[in-house]
Length: 358
Ligand SMILES: NC(=O)c1ccc[n+]([C@@H]2O[C@H](COP(=O)([O-])OP(=O)(O)OC[C@H]3O[C@@H](n4cnc5c(N)ncnc54)[C@H](O)[C@@H]3O)[C@@H](O)[C@H]2O)c1
Ligand SMILES: O=C(O)C(=O)C[C@@H](O)[C@H](O)[C@H](O)COP(=O)(O)O
Ligand SMILES: [Zn+2]
Image 1 (cartoon, protein in one colour):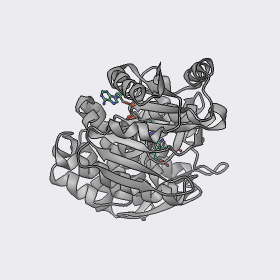
Image 2 (cartoon, rainbow, N blue to C red):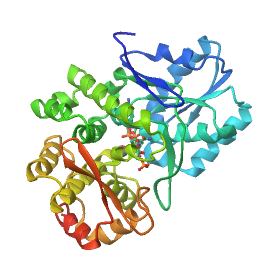
Image 3 (cartoon, rainbow, N blue to C red):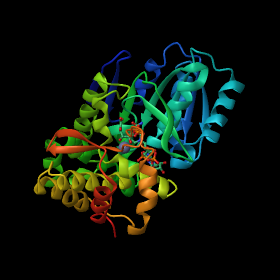
Image 4 (tube, protein in one colour):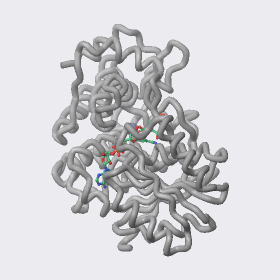
């Protein structure tokens, strides 16, 4: 293990997020006392999951490797049920544990499987994608998609610890690395503008997993999320700011049948949310324009199909931030100054959509 950064996440069940290279040796201590550990992984991470299983075996823990379909195809109730069947067949008890090795889709599924098995067993995300490290693996939100929408079924279930091994990013396809940076940009706009300055100063370095800039961005984004969730695990208030860009973003994912990458959808959603705030006079022109410019520079999408508006509006109505018939959007009142736009009318929403429609 080289130079390790430890970022604490507080709350009733505190834990650390570990960031570094080659840090899988830190996993067995987090599973101390477990006799069996299920290692959930998708096919692209089989070698890493097998390596991890071997380390567990050497530490005296019996691993059960569970292969699940890749990306969003694995994040559904049929796959979760299959995982529970395998835990049952292997006799998993309350002292046993679940590990998810993969991007956000696999760690969301693994956390959900752990949250429901025996009403909650220990789990650890070993995050392998940029988006997973800066966002999905941190904060204890676990869940699956259903026909009604994105992440509508899930549980708050904090992990025992989070491993962000930057060496994993060496094999991450560039398109997924770029998708992940959308959530980093989100953190820049809602809380840490230094992130935006760093990316603007050298956009190529921001997506070069071997360089130092990515590590600084990862650590800054994790710190933003850790600060927020430490005080509001269950999204009673402040945690909503992490949903900036997600009201439209999740709707796009649903309309696309979950074939669009999460980060791509959020990129469009960020530009839309900035436009909404600008239209109602809450956000200045320059900061709104900075969203589109920055995301475009990174190669992220900033527009979506014009004819999809009716479906998108219907999907947004089941967003978790909605209250009854009222939609609620996280918006900016300035750089790093978040607020909520409560109950905007449909004309405003449609007119703002025209700016991202193609
Ligand atoms: N729980 C949360 O708080 C939270 C936060 C943000 C996003 N999410 C969820 O995370 C998911 C998106 O995560 P994602 O962007 O990681 O997508 P993903 O999990 O679908 O991974 C993207 C692709 O990269 C592959 N991959 C991952 N790591 C790799 C590696 N090291 N080498 C080679 N291939 C690798 C995966 O197998 C997949 O094909 C969405 O489902 C989203 O809803 C959850
Ligand atoms: O952790 C949170 O809270 C977030 O909102 C982070 C988001 O980036 C993430 O996509 C999350 O899964 C969305 O949460 P949801 O409750 O809207 O499903
Ligand atoms: Zn997200």
